[in-house]
Image 1 (cartoon, rainbow over the protein chains, first blue to last red):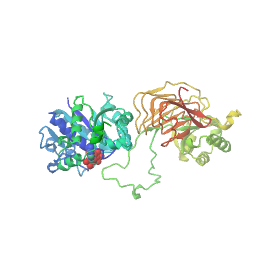
Image 2 (cartoon, rainbow over the protein chains, first blue to last red; image 1 turned 90 degrees about the vertical axis):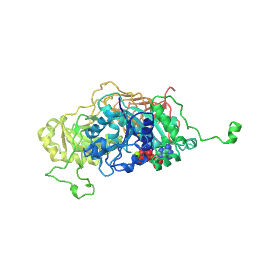
Image 3 (tube, each protein chain N blue to C red; image 1 turned 30 degrees about the vertical axis):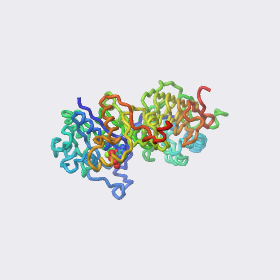
Image 4 (cartoon, protein in one colour; image 1 turned 135 degrees about the vertical axis):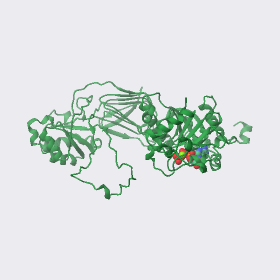
Length: 269
Length: 280
Ligand SMILES: Nc1ncnc2c1ncn2[C@@H]1O[C@H](COP(=O)(O)OP(=O)(O)OP(=O)(O)O)[C@@H](O)[C@H]1O
Ligand SMILES: [Mg+2]
């Protein structure tokens, strides 16, 4: 059974595309045939982060409009032959998105993929609504700040009301919380919300906490999803995310302040 | 106050024979080719109904100003529907355009008439009002949902009756999922029970009481048809706004520290919102 997973947030710039790229790559590394779709019409970020921007010929809108077949538009990842990217259109307008058009593409992908990851644009406009409409599960990407949590709450409301599963009264979308750009020191100073605060406010299960890390920017500049950077803490946190999503029970890491100083360790304070 | 909830409100578009706006010359018309300029949707609204008992504009004006005095904020710029049913043979004398002017003077926005005879309907259309068909009336729990200031001392018959229907208990509306930012839930004609959090940016509304067995972080409005005896109960008071029968209290950061995150009852003491911890 194939699964459609939307990566969404409401708020912009919180790490949806970073998470989509690493999540999809992580699933492929574990042997699952995975496709990741960029719903952010006009911006096209996913192909950059996945390092395949030069190989984009056809895009999602071409497929919806019947100008290209899915086979022609899907780009195979260089490093993993079971991972494919369906890029967003840079030029077309989002009116190409219709439930029928997007639904047909998703149905076709379901026939040959285990996982279909939908990278949602920010906001609650058409692109975001289309990205979540067909979802079976959802990763709710949130930064530890009030405005981001508020927007995620809004998106959760829409998942429960405006998705296919909601409209057809099927089992609700399974929701997972992913807190990104987490900085333990800023949580300690009270600048940022704690994980408990966020969970309490949103009331959904925590899947992963991704620490703020310079490795993310390096990875996206290099076009290699950070999940493949095994030495960075954010890379490891994304690996944990994938493992937990696939059912492993792992403790949360990277929640406390970096390292205790040598003296503090010595005196145990 | 009587609600008129079953009317699907239709978009009021300028008709061809009466073009009020020239959209083509405004800066709003920058739609891309192929994209629609508008969308027409059906939506349900709760509208206050003015049930006229007299055609005497002076009497109506006096009665209205007394009633509205206590509920200014709640009714300011509120759309109202004029119900003509109770006027019997006087109805033909009613000066509808003058009534509209009067209503606008007290910051009400007349939008239509209800239960109009064919002649009245014609007059209404001429006055720029919609003729609403159907519409059920919700039944607030208190007998007199919007008492005039005189009512305590005298029982003089009033000229404008703002919904004084018989009390009927409807089953409470029960919500077991969190009410999330941007969502709005309305329990018409009775109580609302919420078993999960009402989050910031969410709104829960009831004609009767509101019971929240979880934190209230958004807005809660009880007794919205004017039931002064309505209460709001919550397990954890973290609200942005509470209101009972149109009397509001807004909480900005830092205020209400003494009751913050406590289990409380919120009710009306005169026209003042009172909040007391439960179990004391
Ligand atoms: N864990 C992290 N640590 C540091 N920087 C991060 C982290 N996650 C994301 N970023 C940075 O935040 C920015 C936004 O990330 P990304 O593009 O993934 O967000 P998005 O939610 O997809 O944005 P949009 O709403 O524009 O689609 C990028 O510059 C990215 O490098
Ligand atoms: Mg993005």
